[in-house]
Structure formats: structure tokens, C-alpha cells
Length: 355
Ligand SMILES: Cc1cc2nc3c(=O)[nH]c(=O)nc-3n(C[C@H](O)[C@H](O)[C@H](O)COP(=O)(O)O)c2cc1C
Image 1 (cartoon, protein in one colour):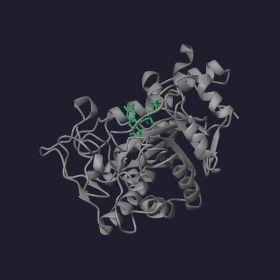
Image 2: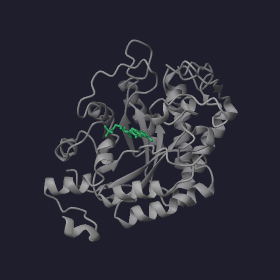
Image 3: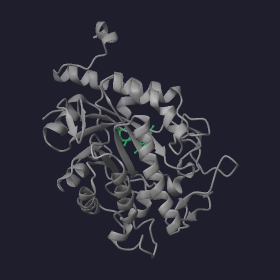
Image 4: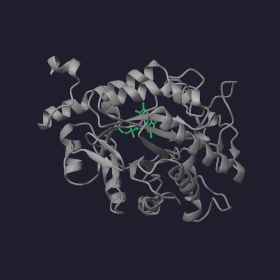
């Protein structure tokens, strides 16, 4: 097994094990509709040889956007706006995937490049979360605690978004339950202090994610792969927080619900987090630990070289090498990797004279 061994999951075969990590482009007008930017950005990484090209965190409801510029998929119009992108990705031999997201209490902020702070003018909105406690910030926004009806509507929104994603032509779906956004906010005792059936015990805190997964799995075809991205740890060792052990336990609970892979990231639940190490491959040990449950895993974080990505697969530390920023620097990472590692490179016909 190596980086260019195809990855088979349900009815999908990705041509290699390089996945473009979901990366917000903050490139929509204030309506969540995909633009030419999304087509060119995602299309380039498909031409660049990646096996799976995953679209950024895509909001399942308008209030689930991080910023007013985020991609959304809460109407048929949103799905239609993505069709040409998925078609192009497939024409390049890559597999189109989409990350379905709700920003929870981290919603209604400026783009990172514009400061990233909460928006208080009429471009913004009231975020929702497991409790009324907002994301800690000097100018924090009032946050609405979801009641059980609101929670049920969130589950429905993920299911509707999943079906629309399939209409749009995506072949793999990923539920975003990481990085301090809504589903992670329910998982973590740092943010979830509810006293109803959605808070308290591990079983209660994982209930919303399990309901989303079960709801989506129930409605999508048997052959469609379903991934879940988690933060393996909250990086808050000194308080009651989500741990790598919790993640391994969660993976075991999600497997019988029809999840095919855990995409293992970390952190971002609280600004007090202490990241112990940010060197190359720093999150791979978390993926390995979650993978011990038997669940296939993706490893992400500072994977930047062909040899490094290949070693992760060869040493059976993860099933996918999920690569973010190196794909911003080089859309042709996978072609370069194939050349360097001595495999047939997925070079587009139009570019063969360049290689
Ligand atoms: C510009 C940018 C946007 C990102 N947006 C998302 C996102 O939409 N969803 C997500 O799960 N992670 C997001 N991330 C995190 C990346 O997917 C990835 O996990 C992280 O950058 C670490 O991997 P890397 O070292 O290969 O970049 C983003 C990162 C960057 C740099």
C-alpha cells in the first residue's frame, strides 16, 4: 500500500490517497452561491492530480456560515451553482467531495483577512450554540441556545444538504464535527454544559452528531461514502475537555451508523487551547490512535512532502493523506508526488508537454 494505491470506499474508487483538505475560500457574495473562484480553485487541484478534492466547509443553513462570504447549500439554487464544478473535477479523474458544516457559536464573523471579529452590523446574525455562552471575544455576539426543536431542524438541515450535494454531483460527503463549530461544540464538555439529553454524559454529548450521521446515512444511497471530520483533542489538558480517547470511542460508535472514514484534525474549541507541537505531521499520531478502533482514517496537518505523505500510507498510519496548505502553494502536488515517487503521473493531456 502506498500513496498512489487507489482508495476504494463503498461505490467510489479514488485514484490515489491524496485528498485536498477542505479550505474556506470566503469567496461568495453574501448569498452562499458558488462563483468562478470555486470552480477554478477546486478544478485546478483536480487537474493537479489529487484523488479526492473536497470543497470547503459549506453551510447547511444561512446562520451556519462562519462569514457572510462562505459557501452554502441550503437551496436547490446553491446545488445548481456547484454542478459545473463537480463535473469538471470528475472530468479530470478526481472524486468530488464536500464538507457539510454549521458554524454554531463561531458564526457571523469577518473573514480572517478582515480581522475575523464578530459582525455587529446588518451583515451579521445571531449565532446558535449548545448554550448561550458565546465564543469568547471582547465584542462577543449574543448567542442563542438551541432548544430541542432547533436541534431537530439542524439534523434536517444536514440531511437536506446531503441530498442537495448529491444532486450537485458530489460523490463523497463529509460532516464537519471539528474546529469548535456546532457539532464539536456539542461533543466537548468545554462548550456543552446542557442538562438535557444533549448534554452531560458522553452519550448525550455525542447524540447530536449521531443523529446527524444516522439521518444522513438513512437518506443517501448505500454506495455513497460518508466521512466525519473531528477534532481529536481540544488541547485543553487542564480542564474537562474532549480527548483522544473520546475520539477513539466516538469512532467505534460511528462505525455501525455507516461512517466510512474519520478525518482526524484537532483543536479550535477555545482560544485558551495549548498546542503542544506544530511540527511536520504533528496530528498524525491522533489519526493513528483513532484508527486503532478499526475505522479508516485520514491524517491532516503539516503534511507537505511526497515522501512524508507516502510514508504515512506505507506505514499504515492512515488511509488518506489529507493536504491543505501545500495544495495552496502547489495545486500540482499529486502530479509532483507521483513523479518523485516513481508512479505514473496523472498529468492532464493538455499539459503533457510540460512534464
Ligand atoms: C485557508 C484555510 C481554510 C480552511 N478551511 C477549512 C474548512 O473549511 N474546513 C476544515 O475542516 N478545515 C479548514 N481548514 C483547515 C485545513 O483543512 C487543514 O486541516 C489545516 O490547514 C491543516 O492542514 P495543512 O497543514 O495541510 O494545511 C482551513 C485551513 C486553511 C489554511
